[in-house]
Length: 468
Image (tube, rainbow, N blue to C red; front, side, top):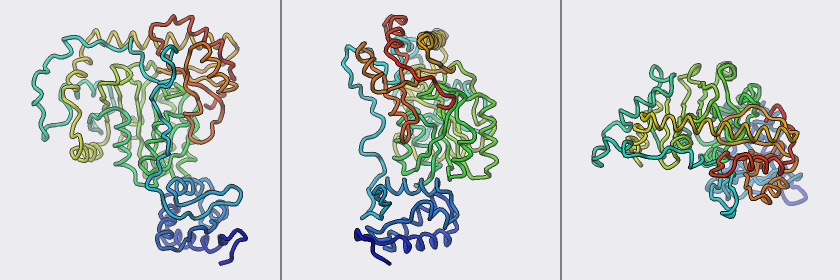
């Protein structure tokens, strides 16, 4: 093996080793390439400081796309097996880190703005629009010893209400409840994915999704969005490049607010079916009961591979910590079996409260009012922004995603008016495609028109492109 001028070795030997390993295993995939690399490293056939082949070179040799090899290299870099040195190339490191989680997680929900500011950065529901608990919501809650380790983890009365919210379930799916939508996604990933698997994620997206994927030693790959959700050709490319899991938000996508109707869902399902690959879908309907957009689910077309999550944090309150998972029976059984080794079940007391809230006509009216108020605020803001020259596409949910000319300058301009917004750059996997901000429609007791005009006057907006 020849020596490079900087003391490192040439990449021909490592290319031969990797090519041989891939050919031997027969698995030309991101996961296969990662596994082959790690095996070679552990067998000391790749030495620290050794220069690795260029991505296009090795892609050609092992008949994989450069994108797939790039994903594998990125994952290995995050694990600590590869060190990049810019134009000098990529090199074998001294050894892996214990985790691929970023030193600083992308999602940090702790506010750091002065309390005097109107904080529209957090994505939390407006507390003034959440239902207020009454004595009737505590009916049939008197015995805290009523639950046992061998009982069904889902309260029967709650299950009846939940099945009414998901019309695609009983024939093909079972139901369980867990402690919020992120807990649901985490538990589902642990059951359907293996370390090194590629997960297709919407981009931009709620940053905790990226963190969760990486915390489970998985590789996120971005999907383009338009006003109807995931762009089909983007999903097709991700599957070709090795994605085997999709995490998607069917409506009120965070941060963009786009929603996916039946026509787009059918087209994406066709892309997945045409790939003839083993695949899993995780749908996060985090704003279910406050969304007004058309509701559809992959469970209509692909029930055997779809897990659908319904959260009640935005509609009934984050402190309930309850989300429902509808998924194939075998998957639900695995989740509940693993959960018995930890929390075992979500508090039946909280489940009783949610069941009572879902049965209360006053609470139902309260949620309908909240849905209308969020929509009114959105339309008001969109109208004010449009009047100043901006273009908007129809969106839904708690947040408003606004493309701007300069993210930092817009945030400073808003702050000068006492308004805090979330930087759009926090919601991208990789480099942002364009500058943006996200505003949460939690105006509290502020005058809506005055606040909308303050926001509009502070924003120098860039006309929204078709793809987000």
